[in-house]
Length: 400
Ligand SMILES: Cc1cc2nc3c(=O)[nH]c(=O)nc-3n(C[C@H](O)[C@H](O)[C@H](O)COP(=O)(O)OP(=O)(O)OC[C@H]3O[C@@H](n4cnc5c(N)ncnc54)[C@H](O)[C@@H]3O)c2cc1C
Picture 1 (tube, rainbow, N blue to C red):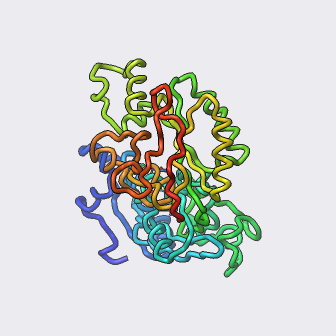
Picture 2 (cartoon, rainbow, N blue to C red):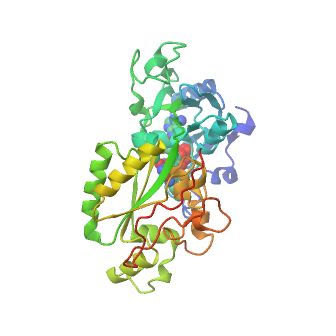
Picture 3 (cartoon, rainbow, N blue to C red):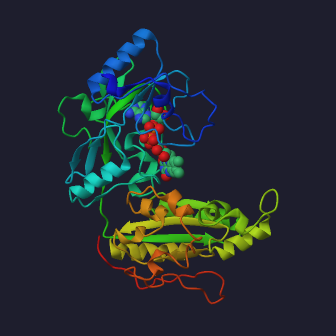
């Protein structure tokens, strides 16, 4: 590989620890970091490691900081860092898929789609700095309709433990043009075998992209009491099973979302868990209730209207809050969660959390700020004066 792509000095190796691990711990320290750029180099690394019985640890980007980051589980392993294998190999705008190398980040794929002017959207994780392949192999969760169950991965190339190369599904036939279109067909489809496992190093992967919908409608469902959670899930289940909601909703409680938009000390400085009555007050003052579900519709505008009416009917007893239709770009606004949900690359969740005053999440969203287009107040207070009720607002109808 040459000196430039092999790290063995202690200082260089420290950069491949989890940045949040204790300074004095060396349990997860690697003995070397290798940065291959070709499949052939990976094959050779695997063969040599086999000969010398050296454990390997692979990462795409290794950005799951706080959970291990780029560090190996077994001390002394040799890291195979795929950060430099970061090419988007193909985007097919007609068949709506991309083929990526294992170091390609969500950022990179998003930028490649934008640069090509394709009307396609990507279902991304909350942080854009991780790799598409690493996230998929680790059973990651993304939020748009194609995020459900990582089912939109299609066709892999894998270097196996003996250094041979395997192509899954239709890829078993050299040059088959439907490798990234159809999961089964000619060859075996053991793609799951390479997820959350160490049976091979994935060197290419197909990922399906969603045609940009006519409209994106961000929605919230909110309840004010813990006991309302079970009925909320009954509603959610029915709406997901019948296809009304076809994305990955996020359900958050007062403490979880409160920690994103405020500080514990703003509400409670005592010892131990925050008491229930304080949580109730927190929910009211931050407008987030006791449980909050973030979800969205991605549809033709007329279909979104019908689905919204249906959700509202089924949501009896719960508040359903909408911001009206939006173009694809605008709704991400300043809320990083919404940016992820609307398929916009982002890495600013932490910046947003610490960046300023607590956000009035529902009653004062990004669209309400001065100077923003489509800035009509989208959620109005209900008659009882407690929190927002449903209001469709003067929606931004800008097309994606
Ligand atoms: C604040 C924060 C928010 C997050 N939000 C989300 C979220 O919304 N959704 C979500 O899913 N995750 C989320 N994560 C988790 C994490 O960021 C991502 O899952 C991760 O970044 C995925 O990309 P990576 O390249 O870092 O993965 P890596 O750490 O490189 O890889 C993940 C696993 O797959 C293996 N692997 C990687 N590449 C290969 C390969 N080519 N062949 C074989 N094995 C391989 C690695 O050994 C590792 O075990 C979040 C993390 C943080 C810190």
